[in-house]
Image (cartoon, rainbow, N blue to C red; front, top):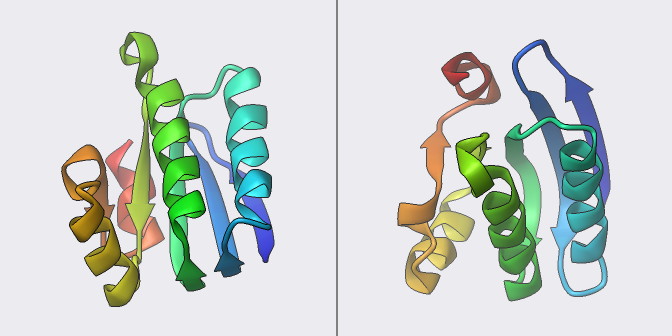
Length: 111
């Protein structure tokens, strides 16, 4: 798994590629924690290059969302979610918890 972060004026774009599973989900959590620790709570996660995401990855997303939404400071927005991952998020009941955009440009523009 590779993670790239880009800091914009109003938000941070996190681009993930590869597999997010129990072995790599902690890296995603650490990236979220670093951004939040710096006082930035608006995060866009570009998921276009993710091949697979396990329940550990879903929990990392949920933990990041909870931290960002605390005290109404921000949120995690998901961009370019692959169809199979979206279906898994829907089955897990996570879809109502996130905003979804077709691409990272429109997601970043939302902030």
